[in-house]
Image 1 (cartoon, one colour):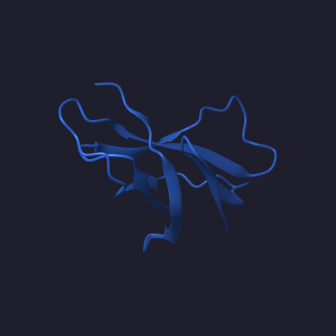
Image 2 (cartoon, rainbow, N blue to C red):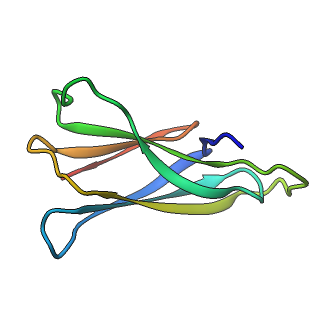
Length: 104
């Protein structure tokens, strides 16, 4: 099943891992019903690095395929950025309702 943007992104945390070459990006947010699964951060493609140094991601997941309950549910995911760009100044994450940024 195709993944869709989740309803909203709430929190972003960014941690430089022990090896100093990998950035762990964690994002959490909400979906509008039960049954969403396999969340992930999907990087936007760039021909060249973004001039503002803010790298964009969509937070997506598989929507429910069967019976679901119409209730707001939390969801979270993590992305490992294994090659940290030299111009990285922040992370911007897009959901269907909002956008959230983490500035380094």
